[in-house]
Length: 85
Image (cartoon, rainbow, N blue to C red; front, side, top):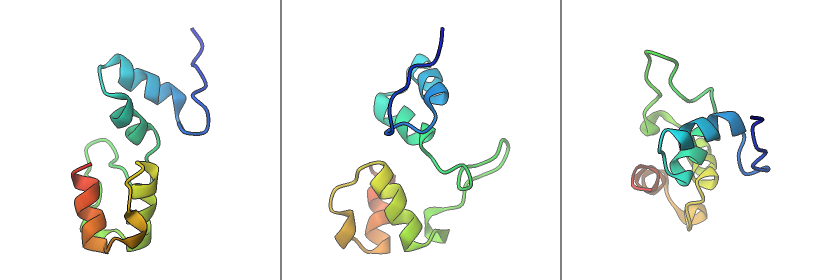
């Protein structure tokens, strides 16, 4: 069965569908499928802690997961919002 095109809101349709089949919520599957692979962990590794990210990178991640009010948040507030989203 061919992979459905979920439009521009999903970067990796195949990964998104696989995660949904595993039971992940639409939001979590989209977040993973849209993650910037340069920032995600490679198998066996760890992704950098948010404290190591630049404010610009945190803002872009917050935009990907549609966190409201991100434009007026400090770096610490962005980190908190991303962790508790």
